[in-house]
Length: 273
Image (cartoon, rainbow, N blue to C red; front, side):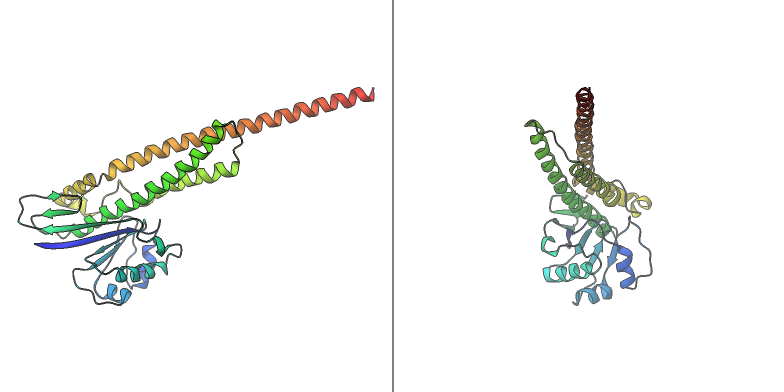
């Protein structure tokens, strides 16, 4: 039985693959859809350790990194430090917060068998490492996004509690900041993680396409994406309601100021008589 291990991390929202490729001497311009695959001498020069032919690192533009056949965390940490020289906002202290492990087993089975921890395949296909890595990378990126959405919901719950107590004052700054978080969350999910996009190999190989769809379905990426999308729409509707309340309160305040000024002018007029 041949085995490959995968360990995926989501460490930031975006990684510029082209900057890393230039530094590694890779003469290629990367798009959002494809990962940067590092192995052999290039990988050896980065982690300052010997690497074998089965080891590789896949770096994704949406902030996820997948390590194939790595067993030593100090090697992974060294690679994170290397990435941090390009992306300064990476917090290495929380690098292990969003992570997942998976493995590929090649066995004389009759068909593919997917479980929570591994997939068993009857024969090895060259597209397995990239497709498994892509699904894992998207899964951990979604996990990070789901937690960020939870924090936004917690903040909104605080505002709703204030409204229930009759405190109708909602600052424009608070509304703008929360709306920006919602928009950023949606942008990170739709534009960067690209749940609905498929690797190029799936368009040229029906076997690769079927395998990728099975992995996507098993990790429930489409369902999780739809849930996030629905929650985002609900959040946007709530923020629109908050904005309407805020504008109504300010409009009412202005109207009262105008009434007071008119009354004041009338009183001055009467006193002058």
